[in-house]
Picture 1 (cartoon, rainbow, N blue to C red):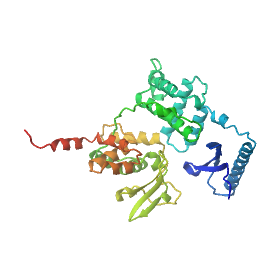
Picture 2: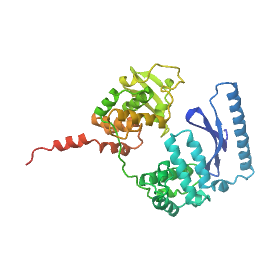
Picture 3: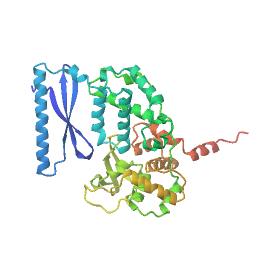
Picture 4: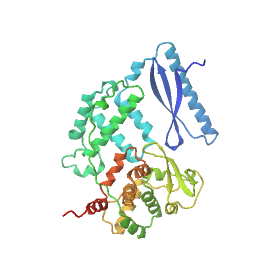
Length: 377
């Protein structure tokens, strides 16, 4: 019988084709993961193949050292479990940097800044974090934390504003994600997150375009056709900017007479597919090489700036950003009597409750329901 290896090299696929290497260590009935900060790159030529060979050789040497430590009882599992919160948060942030959009990356970075401020620059072992500590951090976010965002620089001569409830809730979510990941990797026996109620996320106002407003926008000329194509594509598919930006021709296949987009959702890292409406395929343009992106490169900030000008030129008095296209799609589907479960799947939501928020803003549905009340008086 072949003995099971106590240490194995495993890979984790990252956005862009790179693969992160880590050790899967099984010791005294416990599983421990050691992330090596070593990465394999796509092999496109002899140089990249040699680079990967060198990287794997280094990983093998580290693996051999760990096996020797286990055999000589020098593997100090408790010491490895004593990793600090800030150190682990940095590792997790680095792992996610290539996987998440710029907005989410900023949330992770700002959360780290607040953790440093809350801890007065001194790290704390993950095992020392308990429910009382989490409640203290919640109190800090709600009452003592200040906003680092650039748009508040105009308040330099006045009291620096506190975090809004939505921002505080998002920062706390990132801390919880860090602790949940640490528990999954065997660094926590008891996760305090499960004993503390999360900060409530207040319902925010979601701007969207009605079908009539969307028609008006389409009829309004715009100089930069990249903005038009990408925004309308999102309005008619519900896809996020990150999933549209990374779309490659090789991910588009023909199935049952329709074009299907097969992709890994950037936010959730889940494999998804989406059948494209025939009028949506007209926005794709001329097919190119499989590795070519469908849409020309444009930054989110430039896109939103030009989109705002286009909306203003169309006479629409709403603050519309690119993400509003996703709201537009959701509301349009509800208006067209698509069931909430199907909309949730189209949007790639993990929870139905997230999609149900859109149902509250469809006023026509409410009016129709009221008008169906029979004559009783």
